Image 1 (cartoon, helix red, strand yellow):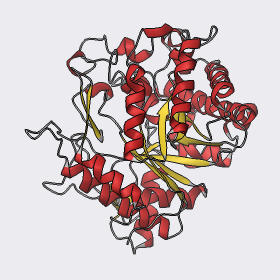
Image 2: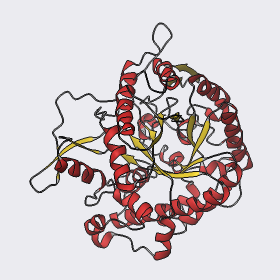
Image 3: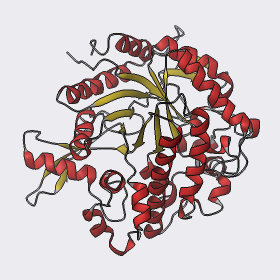
Image 4: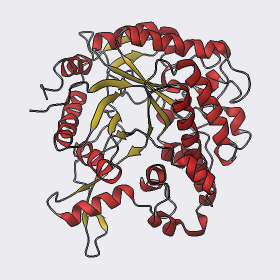
Length: 451
């Protein structure tokens, strides 16, 4: 029977741009996604986050639904341009007050806020000053982090600096599929990645100074390597290499992002792979990057089965014909929530929180007025069973924060993907808890014994 420790943080997750709306309300400044959504063909049917789930106005209703769900933790992000419309300089008091009220309401409902400082809504004015390519970007971010920490740090105990930096750097600055839509040289992409890591480290220092007793983490998105034969040491090693090693002109190897934080240096394998394109890091920058963290948040949705070839390299297994997939075209392989946490625990020795995991489905309101999503229930049960196994085998797992609480703006897919436990009718903003909402409530109530 699946079992989680007492105090396990059962929760849900969202992000500011994906749910808040009020894109020009109460002094909020524009972000790169506001710009990107206006680019013809960039986002599905020209959708944008101007209104989204109108959470900025309906947050009380949403907190009441969370209380009904019984979650113990809610991961949300603060919108940088809502707090600082220009990214730096004058603070927008109305923006800070919004998060102030939200945190107080969560605590009153018995829900711990898990706050992400940056979930992709980079201030447009700072992008026009070079964005993450500007070496000052780390200081911009640290100053923003201090403003938020001074306001919320007396009540927030769990902080995350950056959400999925390999995504907003690779997809935003390399492939151009996400905001701001750039296609830079790889040496420039690497430099931007380096600056984000410096920013994360400086923000961590600030959070420790202004949020006493807090726990600080970083959140990569991972598609871990899964050993085809888990009894084979060679396959297990190949799977770990698939997770952590760098490939040419790619930032999807996790070692590049986490090794410098935990070990104080970029991995030799990555430096050899990138060669002269790698940024020249100063000692001062590396000291900032390696500011100690307390946990690693993992966003995990799928994984990739591999085996060791004759030279010990990771050889991908062919995709099975008719493999189960979500609406994101991601293979459903619940082993990812065992091997991902295990690999990170073994390499870094840091407690693990699952900060995102969930399914994009084809959900609608049925004739009976309800939303039936059995695939999401099955997906979540399968993955939680794997996570429980990892925990029982010694991986320190702090919690599970389901993505997402609400259907929302799914970046370049617009509103054409639904991840929520709660259905959102975007025309009316009516919320309809799905079957998965009620199943998850029972799972939380019994601490996973129903899995």
